[in-house]
Length: 486
Image 1: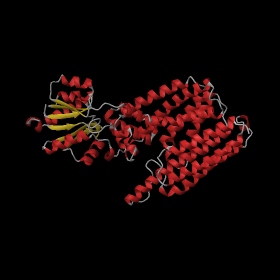
Image 2 (image 1 turned 90 degrees about the vertical axis):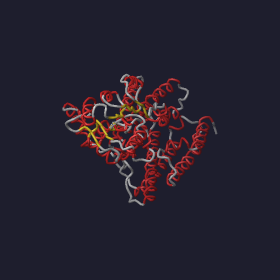
Image 3 (image 1 turned 90 degrees about the horizontal axis):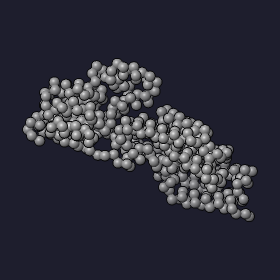
Image 4 (image 1 turned 180 degrees about the horizontal axis):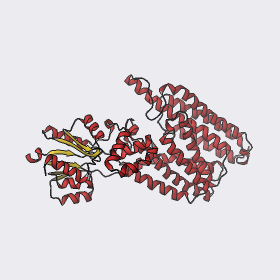
């Protein structure tokens, strides 16, 4: 770098540059999560100007700047400039409340320029300010978007961060010294991680009514349920994205969730919103080709999931009941898609077994929190984003195990019912499933109590070899009861 460039002030943009996110969008989501009714005031604030909107949102949304997804390459660039004695400035269109907090956290910038209630510091306004402060061509500007072109036109040197090819071509025409850093294309696995494609396996529950009604050879039923599976998966992925976007701050405080694409900044919030709309539209289009009962079940799932994400997951006891209901809704949707009559026994079993699994999930989170508190010698606290405490572990274990055993009791009563004789030649063989289920539920809780349970028990079961062995034995028992005559 020449002596001239060393004398230039290094001016660094914030959103999408120093951090892999946009604080204005995050503050909007944070405000709506806290007070959804404020959505009606957002257009009124915007009519008064973007600066007013940003100021109003900043007053209402607390963002922990310590856990934001900072770009290591940009931090290194600023540190290198300071080591050479250069003046550094944080220049951002975000509200000054956030900019000042970030500067206090990083302690890397000599000056901070940000938007306030009367000025939206973007585009040509930002360019005019920098020329006024540092002179024409007297600063090196680091940014990431086309909105920054007016600033680069008046900068002495150009540094782009993860810039698009079209932006690089536009900058090349300026004929100024430039370089691009942190140009990383988004990998396909990042998109798949964002939609949580591994969670689609839960939607296999839609096939359960077809299985229990012995309709596996019914091509029309299987075809409809397959379409339902795809529709449910797409809509469920959309709700996962909504949950992740509204849980950015709590996810960033979590050991594993902080690596999720949106929390980590691997995908922008804007990309998440666009993907969410696309998934919802695709899922809805498929659902419209299926029976009305399936459509209503999917709508109930969508509404319940959004209520859960916004409020219900923070209500003790109600959260696990809602989770159990969401799993059961998949079974109900599968029955409607296949045209199979809903079974009282199947619904009762579903509610109890899924309540058991929901409680496993909560206990696993609390045991993990308990470990951290013990290591850090902290006072007992709450799981991030929940209202449970480690003191609740014992009662939740009792409730969860009881729910699991009640599910086994439902199976036992079903085996002794009149309905079972219509489907199985020798229903007495089905009694072998009861001790198998007892063994599985008991082991599930032993594993959980020992702190070895993944946070999602269904995904744990999918990876657990003993669960697969149990499922295989259960399949043999069901087949035997169907074809064997004693």
